[in-house]
Length: 307
Image 1: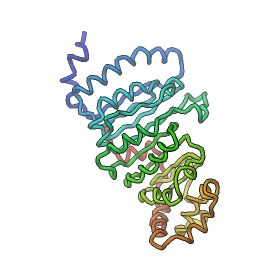
Image 2: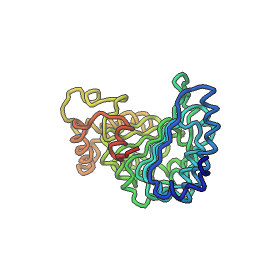
Image 3: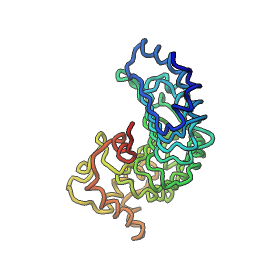
Image 4: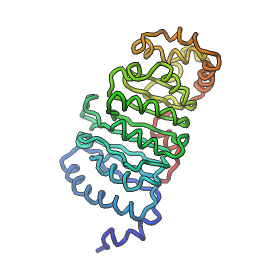
């Protein structure tokens, strides 16, 4: 029989820079039993990774529990650059996602997705959660904030007090290199209740690479591409030409200004200085040429991998 993992770790793990683990997405008693059989070995693996592997890229697909992700993140936090993980099923959202207390100092991509099985439909209250304060602490640990390109938490709710959520929103301004961002919060009327309008506009201007920017009642999405399942250029700009800067601003802020700030987007635009309006002029130039894509494909383009 092969030697135990502990005896082989120096041979197999000492040069391991990338790791991918994929589990079946089939919903059945047999596959759940199989998960329960392999999960202890995966938890054991994380301790060996901490001891031996300079892991920089982590790809986890359709895990049934967040414990594995939490354990590996904790073990490899100091050198991990790219984390792409998906969790599936109700078991994986029973506990909040825990982030390493040591932070993720060289992080460049953090994409975590949760979904239920095809025949299930989870309500927003049943989302996997992550707490705002630990998330901000983890982001603040990044040594080169401009190097963080992807921050996507899909199917996940950021929980926290109003004060913690406001600090997180303000902290996001540091990450000027973001090409993809997707966050959903738990505070009702998130932006109007937590940020002065000037702070919200400053957050938008902090992300020059983001072309499509959309604010929901409790969510923010931004991409440097047109998401295939959300919208496209002609839906927002039927004339098909490069839009005017004011059109871009109105599309981005009309709804949130009316519903959360009780203000007119047109009036706010007219109050801006030319230097402030020029940001949306630069965005307008990028919109017609942005490709259609989706987040997994875009991440693969930004961070090519052999996995």
